[in-house]
Length: 290
Image (cartoon, rainbow, N blue to C red; front, top):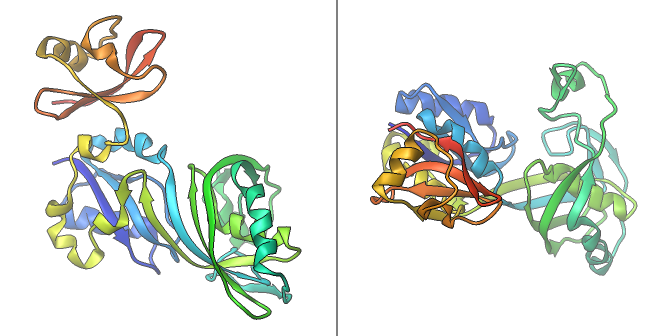
């Protein structure tokens, strides 16, 4: 048994706990996820079951969409509502002022990762160091914000701001919220976060924890889970070479897009491999066993 499962993660539990519950429900020991969600966050957590965990990176590379709510004027040590409040400073701004700074946070931007994150420093997770009271200097990293849309701005000295963001991997929505508040002269933290999709894999199509006993009904084939990648269907003769991880300089397999990963399918539509076309040569990235 192998495939992908979209879990609509509830708030209040870790992504690792979801993985553990899926292992227990399915009896499959090898389970990996395509991007952690913080305990507070809800929504699409995509899991790979069985030997298709090698395909996770092709899901991770897809844009992620989030719906978020941030409270401006209140800073916490985790940049979200799970943390301790560090300061409260009323913020007085007009919605148009926030709209004016949004373009600064689209395209390629640089973020300083929060201390409460799973990144490693000298072999240790940053959140482990943070819990010991340490604050480590972190370098800003480039991330991509494809879309950023402010949906609503609340009233009062500590207004709640609802926004939608589509971003690349490695983006911290907590940091984005605080950075937007900082652009207006204050600080902020997330009060709600929901990941609505990774690529075309939507939380709305996922299984809830309450329905996990019915997980087989939600299992996606490897090919269906990677529909964001282009596909090439090859002949049985080419397929034999694909199964052995061969490179190709001609034939039906080189119909893929130059420089991009693409699915190689057999005549039944099943995924045999993921290839990449470089300089006219088709090279295997992942070959699935039969």
